[in-house]
Length: 503
Image (cartoon, rainbow, N blue to C red):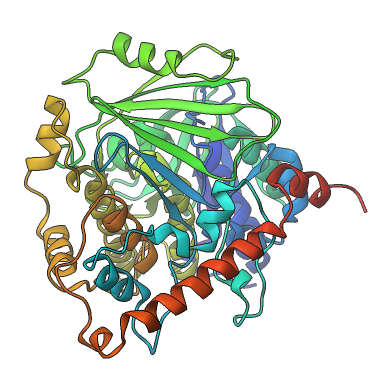
């Protein structure tokens, strides 16, 4: 390949961890064949956050694009299957529901299922909406089978993700990327050298004196954002007025031999605790607001709720929820925590890494300075993040809890207009705002609305043309089909043992 003087010939990734090695692996598979060199700088002296262990289904497709074998990945990361997230005590104490990776019911004459369910509910019908979701029943009965590729089959109505050791995933990707030619440099970055004329990054200088030059740089340095914030001065939009939790404490513990195929998020007095079952242990954490709870109180709640013996000391983290005003500035893009932070309530951290990598590669500039590509990347990522932000706020704001100052605050706080419009639309008409760019779509919003007690005042007018007996017959048939389908599936642990067994 022939290069011009401004062409990108070398990309340097600052920082390892999940963000760094996901970036390196994707570039190795998709960009290195173009003749572009990729180098990653990291220091073994700098630890990674590494507490995010729950993922979303999109990661499966990322791995498939790279040619990663799923069975090898599950073995290497002690992964379990994830069908969704169970939310406990969010609408009010004693409530629980599952946000599944799949459908709620099925359309009837192109009308969304929930219109029929809510129509019956206003007449006294008390069957859970969750009863008509295959992945919810699979999760509750601790069963699993691979989805069908035939869209006419009930087993095609869901997807799945992983619950895994994020540190092991990064190591897995490191081996993968290095085999494909990514160069790893050990060392701490001491200085970022900028071009005096343009302000672009020229090179990274390590404590050893080594200088690593590049044409484009990816900032995966975590909360510090060494390149984007410290060197290029990109500011931060603070969203703590909407998402006030600013601390977390995490600790793994021993687990049982039958891990559940879902993550659990349990609302507490001033935040929430997570539980993520892996094959060899359980990941636990407590996300909380320091204005309403001390570190000592948070740790006590977490440790008292463990089901097994802790296998490590509690790890405390501080964060400010928000996002960089730009994720791409000059010849640098931030990926992972260096671009911002949203609490892991819906397991979005690894997804946002994946989204940034994907959008960057789609827009891969031919030149170091590409204003149009940069503007489009920042626009798309801002849209992704703001829609996730609104979805997270919904969990806190759609509550009846009034048992603590924290819940009184989030229940009554002002929310972004973009979220208020969505909530008002659903409450008044049962319509879920549709959009193409964004992570959480119809079933996700529906699960939280219904799970936390937001029931529409009306249903689609066509529903009234059906009599109650017709609707009940459809629902009974669907529920029966779901129950018989799940009954035929193997237990989750049995599936894992069979799936990764050498052939």
